[in-house]
Length: 445
Image: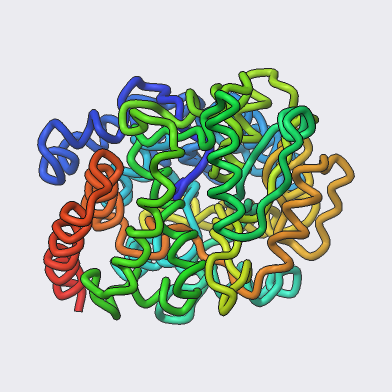
């Protein structure tokens, strides 16, 4: 995740796995600060600007979101008079070096994720509380957005800009040509997968090289089988990873694996999207923030793209929940230009700002109550509807849990499962996950 999002194409050519293979956390802590600073794309990166100007660390590195972010910062400058220098770093590098970045010489503002993933760094004292900003913008957000923006101490630490649903994508023309119907239950989906295979299609396009896309599949099957509260308890290790309900998730996922594009751990998700674009695959489960954005990047036929909500597995939970991650902006504890940075955050908390960001964004949806975005396409209008229909939304496995545990331990376990979805593998990785979780979460308390 990302948590995950649309920022998969490395600007620097350094992926998450490239970083990890050079020696894990210890190596990261030494490499992080120069790595982030070296990727600067928009002026000063050390927060040395004078009054009336700020620096902004951004992981919006793919062309489309980078352009939307540029529209937002230009609008913020026009509204507030604050000059903004943007330091863009590819998503995975930014995410994997965030601790060292915030401990070193961070930019004044930085892009980040709402929920537990923000709370971890707020608890470490690396993010500045912004209650005074929320005193001015709070009435413009629903309670759900307010909850996502608070730390464990009840103070506000992030201003969200948009969110997006994780859903099952397909090409309307493929379904029309083949006579496929939208599945609403697990059995219907498996039947559809078998039909697609007999028609020479890959039922589900899939790319897991970046380590996080498959976490979304774990999340949705867990939400469908066990509900939202269980998901949150598991993410925070309030139930063990050896629990039989976790076994149920992997067993159900194993039923789907014969219909998933093989070789996923060696394929980036962008290439998986291209399989769907080429109509060699029938479906793909991921966020609008990735699939629809990639269609735009590739100049594919966005009007042909549609989606449906992941089918029901257990009628107890129906289709009540989904991952709908929210992204936003935080003020670094070490920010040098606090007052102008807060001016910019106050502006970002307006519907006007969200509309400026979404003017050329064809995949995310606004969070502010007064956001008026006439440019919404069919994907975005449907996104608003399906998110609103949920009883609750999760943020994503690597945002709802400890980020290091999710990115390293869970991602590695899921890779192992994808390459060998057997009962023996499931038992082995559950034991490993529980042992690692005990270490990680015990150390936090």
